[in-house]
Image (cartoon, rainbow, N blue to C red; front, side, top):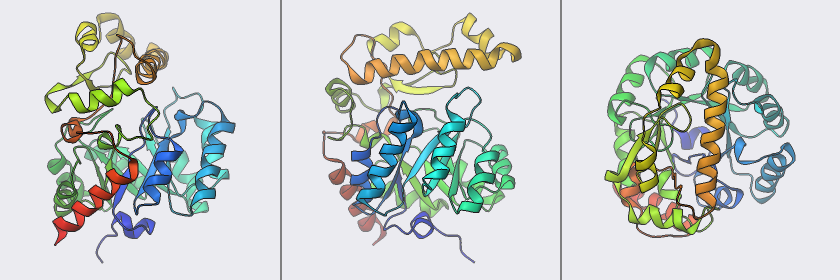
Length: 321
């Protein structure tokens, strides 16, 4: 029996998920994506309170019955994890994307409700763990992803997972054109998760400076920093990032590598990093820390979300001919 692709699994027109992006994804973007034949997800952490999270989910559900998902940080360093999980179960979102921790509880709680669980993975070892736990699919985060990227190239990661596990693989990283989607699916992916090319959409709530940077900078300007969240994060190499440096200093390194201090250090560094990214995302400041992936190379203008989606799906149709 051939494996289901993501469009078959979710009942959508194209095997594309618009990736959940911290501080960027909002209900306008999600609704525009769903109206144009693809799925989309947003991070639960984009909403400060439970009431705001509930309101966002209800708003999307009122506008459409098309499937969408929510990204949940399942790490112990996320103090909102338990409450957010209860809300997602209560409102029965279509799928949950888990990141940065064990998805066991999420999978066990979602199964009886028919909520699918897609787990972020960066290698085979972790994929085998979530497969054993009962995940519905994996989001294979490769070395060309924006935000928290993996270390393995798209082709190698898909091949390793395809040969050694039976879960559908959603390839995440480096997708900018329809031909890129066809390529990864030819390698064995069941679909794709796409983020960077949507950052400069009209609906994104970020500053005009951030959107302009998406146009002005290219792939060569993307660097990895461990200064912000304790994990490697891909950002645009602005003058401020150059001044800050991209390697954790000795104190940050000790905090991150000491078993006792690690949990608290991760919380502090992640909180501090999130605050820095948040300030830069919403206001013009010399402290510019803007997340993006190598697909930034293909962002040439600020466009409506629907138009970016339609261009991508049209290109995929053409690439499949």
